[in-house]
Length: 394
Image (cartoon, rainbow, N blue to C red; front, side, top):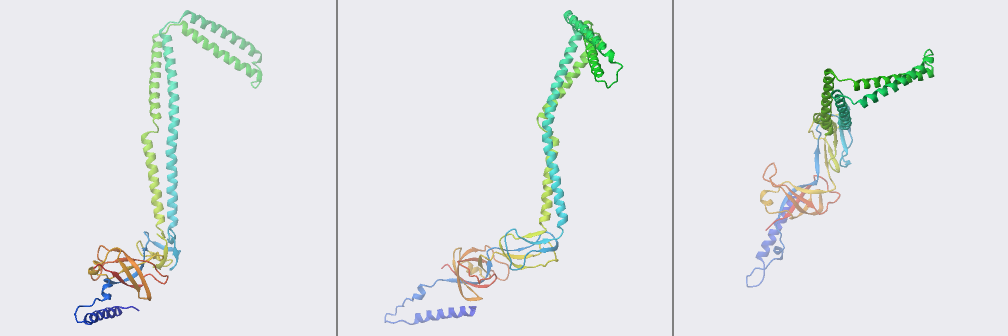
């Protein structure tokens, strides 16, 4: 084992060799003889360190609960995202997630229906506009008929229509008369009765038109026609305004509410899922479970250490006592020689890749330095003690 006493003995031997070289020599000139050893000397700084993974973490949960499932054991290799531990209470949170998802579905359907119904409402509003315009035309025509006397030719034509309609009505009455006493479910009787009703309606309409054309409108008729036109025009104006609003899409207030409902439902789903996820502890990266701090059926609290995992496929050296004087003599890229207390026959080489910008907590002013190894043998283990010699600046 290479110990500090061995290092001191080595240094003493080097000093002795220096003294012998200075006192010895030959020739009468008295000039010193150059020593090859001094020409090859490289200054170093020494420190103690330990073996650590390049990536490791002590894991804990964000929730409290009883460990209902401990899925790994110490020494197990795990992959990123693999479940390590599950806490109880998941049934209630799963129900909360399902309820939130159901509300999200309902909110989205309501929003979709709002857009779909807006198209139907616009089409209906357009049809209402067309009907209102026809009503205005009819009311205007009726007012014109009241205000202006009818042409004699129109009156004569209307009277001729009355005569023809009366003739058809009389014929329909004559045809129906023989079957009037027949049962109501008699097919011929029913057919003739329908023809009689149609003939009666045609005759009545012809008489009304003839009377309207030959008569002169009273003040009451004129007022009624004007009122009908005003109502029709107001209805058209309202229908056109409704069509303009519907053509722009859903009502802004209704749309804002529906969108807010969907956004709130998304938030509820995310919150419920997060609460459920907190009951599980997953590996953040590929590595090995080096230590477990809990057992199944134990109660754990938020932040309590659960497991220590590290990536043992890549190890490095971390110094523990490199003082402020020595750390000032090295830099990123300095080469280092490392020996392991537990493996005395092993000599490793590496490069300084990180120097702490602040002193470590504890006794003395020491800075942590990380050394990347050129290669790491299989027998090298986490937390083994290391002795480090780092090439120093002149």
